[in-house]
Length: 70
Image (cartoon, rainbow, N blue to C red; front, side, top):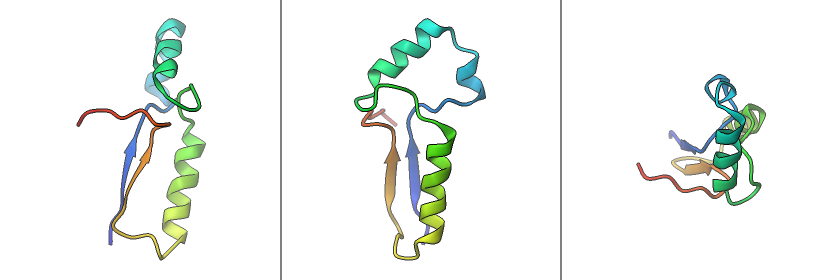
């Protein structure tokens, strides 16, 4: 059964191009920790989901507590 990942802001190639002021602003929107997520954090979560057969049909948020509208 497929699980879903709902991602917040991650430090990917698109975010690298943003001005520092915009990065700081976006980081402050995140509840905890107040920063953008790292690709390694996403990879670790995906690895755990793949390796753990007991996780199924879940919606997992990786967003530091920042809830974004669909």
